[in-house]
Image (spheres, rainbow, N blue to C red):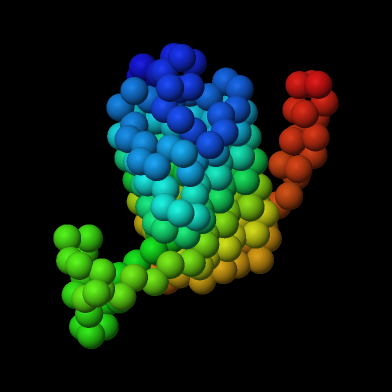
Length: 188
């Protein structure tokens, strides 16, 4: 995988750009002026970040794997140490599927009903492959989403989630917080 050079990253016009950002030259970025990237962020091949007015904010030590997509008008936030496995999709906007409106971006706004709501993944959230997170979802610190899940509502911290729709499977341990403190001491 080839990553963009610092000069190339700077030329993209991000709202903010942290240190040691690794962005694949095969990733697609739309609305860079609404995207904030923290330190030690890695975004792999074929990931798509499409920021609307609400923007996308990526914290530090965040990995976004191949074929992930972050889309929508409202804010999408991934706090420090969050991670997305391949083919995860996060939406902060969705069309109205009731049949009362037309759908898709080729249709004039007068005939659509797009609903938008911010999405937030707190620190240490990890989302398994091929999972989808819908508008308005907030995952508390340390939540883990199993592969192929549909997250359509918010969850409290340190829950292991899975299914369609996602539900709590069990509690998740929080020992990783101790490891984070050790790592940050070494970095200072």
